[in-house]
Amino acid sequence: MECTETRTYLSDYIDNDLETRITLLIDEHLEECSECAMEYGFMKNLILELGSMEELEAPTGFAQKVHERLKTRTLFDKLKNMLFISEKIGIPLEVSGLAVTVLLVLVLFGVFSKTG
Image (cartoon, rainbow, N blue to C red; front, side):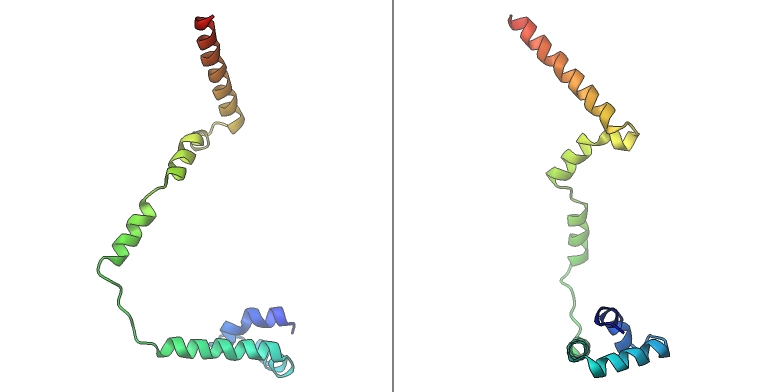
């Protein structure tokens, strides 16, 4: 088994969630490859350390604040929605661009014809 394939399985290997055949292949690879064995040891220790931590409680209102921030749209999001409204109603972008161009030409022509 190659290193990249072994590393994709390490989490499941630690959790004993693999077929016996794959587990044996990983066992062999870890005996031969010091880099993967080191990564395996690091992951296993990290999981043990995280499991030994005491449970933390989120501050009051934390979940509500996160949801509110997710709902809040930025100025960029608002502009994007305004500019690309044609996608929502099914008008091709080219048609929308042509309509805006024609409107702009008419407005500019009207402005210049009044001044001249």
